[in-house]
Structures are given as C-alpha cells and as structure tokens.
Image (tube, rainbow, N blue to C red; front, side, top):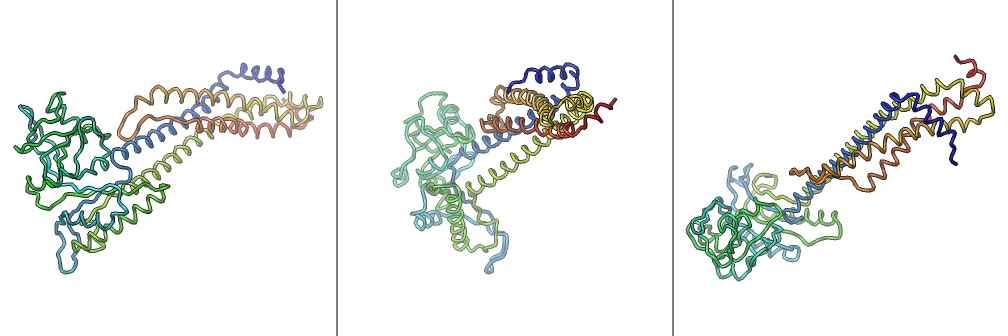
Length: 414
C-alpha cells in the first residue's frame, strides 16, 4: 500500500544527507556497473572464440607428422615421419561409414604465381573436392574442384579472393590461365573464407596434379576429416575422440612409432579444443561473477553502515513511535524501505550506464578473441534481482536493531 508519509520521510532523510547518500549509492552503482561490464566482456570472449572455430569445419580432425622422440623396435629417435597417399586411402576405406568429409593435402609453400605482369607468392595446395567443406569455404565465382579433375590430372585451379584481387585487379579470372612456378593452370573458381585474407591467399589444385607436376610423388603434408553431426555436443565429442584414438593407433602401427611417442603423429581434434575453450570461458565467466558480486557486497556493507548510522541518529524518534504504539514490523519496514530505495536507484543507474556503454562501445571492439561484448536479457533480470536482494540485505540488520530498541531507553538517548 502506498504510504505518502513514509516517502516524504525517505526524501527528507536523503536531503539532509546528500553527500553521504551519494557516496553510498556510488559504491552500489559501481558494483553493478563492474559486474555487467565484466559479464559483457566474458560474452564477447565467447563470441570471439566461436568465430575462430567457425573459420573451419566445427568438428574437424587434423593430422600432421613430426619426428620420433623415443627408440622403438630398434629404430632410433629423430626419424622424420612422412604421410603417404596410402595412409589417407586406408583411413578412408577403413572408416568410410564414420566419415563425412575427408581430404589429404600436398602443399607448395610460397609458390610464385603469375598472371601477365602481376605476380605474388602464395600457398598452393593440392587437395580433394571435400576440402571446400573442411575449410568452410564458399564459392563466389565458378566451381570448386571435382573428382574428374583428380582422375584426369587436370591443371585447374581455384583461387582465393585476395589472389584474384592481387593478380586480376578485379577482372574476371574464370577461364584465364595463371602460372604456378611457370606451369599453366586454368582458373575455374574463386572462393571466400571466414578466416579472411590469410585463408584467401591460397590456390587450390587437384592433389593428383600437384604431386605429379611438383614432384610430390605420393607424399602428403597432412590429412583432415570430419564426422557426421550428432544429436548433442557430448555425443559428437565422444565419437570424435573414439575416431581419433583409432586413427592414431593405426598410423603409429603403419609407421613403426612407439605408442607413447607424442611427437611423431600429431592429431588436432577441434571439438576437444572447443570443449577446453568453452570450459575456460565458463571459468572466466564464473570469476567475473565473483568479482562483480564481491564489489556489490562492498557496496551493501557501505549501505548497511549508513543505515546503522541513520538508525542511531533517529533513536529518539523510533522510541517515540514505539511509545505511541508503532509495531516492530512497521519500524523494520521503514528502514528496509529506505535501504531498498537507495540501493535500487543507485543500482539501476549503474545498470543503465553499463548497458549503454556496451551498446555503443561494444560493436567497436573487434579483436581476435573478443567480438561484440554484450549482455542478454537473463543477465539484466539477474542484476535486477541482485539489486532487490542487496537492498534488503543492506537494511536488514539496521532494521532488526531498530525494531529491538526499547522505548524507555530510546527516550533517554541524547
């Protein structure tokens, strides 16, 4: 029920103690402000990490090799392990029912690519048709490689947007011939990639052609696979880990590598990486909540101390009220009302300020691992609940003390 007299008392108390009320409210506002900004940054970090994983297929398994680190079956450590076509073909045959996309890669680093008078050094990669989906690339002109290109050893190329802009200066490259290390390749397509210019500085050719014309024999640099989508992240992670374990065991057996050797055969499981990153993000978010809550608690303590001072200053008034028949509950309500009002107003100021900051400044923040920091509706509702609870907690102990004041003692107070 609306009580005009109580509101008049609250505003009268605030007018008498403007500076004290302002400083008390500032501590609460800063606590809410820090909490919301930290949560916004945490969400921005999650967005940034998600964007990084979107650059390639979300469930990609990437295989590359190094040198052996331990002696095994009479073979000395330090052997360089070289992947072959048969490694890829055997894996594809053995797990054909488990795989979604697959490709091996033969790479020519910093190959000189020419068109007319223009030239540049780009990564030229011999790949399979599925590589488009493994790299999450999209065609903007022409087509991607197909299996006939591989079977017929066609000298065709798919180039990235950056290569097109560098060599063809915005012109139409489809059907034109460029030279890779002085060997002509016909451009059949142009692709774009979420990874930006770094990924678009590539030239893709059929792997069979690359191995033949660049003396690659049957060597491959790495292999990539994806598994079909599962109903949940946990199921997808379990299937991915199971496939990774079998793949690692098979490759180590083929290349006579010790089971405990961690350097010779390297497998990167993007789902496992994603889980680690998201677990880390959850820990960071929990830490941010902790910092914000601790800051708010500091503000609550300040409000509670101020309310204790106010109760002390109004001891005689409270005694008169109780002598005239005021119930303890009404005394508690009077103190709590003022405490919740000050806390809520200060908290809403901090909330609105922080939301405005994230709204206007957030879209301008674009780093590698932070993108569009913001808070959602649930967070806003949570902070409102925190405000109400904070105000109640701040006023509870002063209100409880006020309710216990005996009229005769209060009337003697000086």
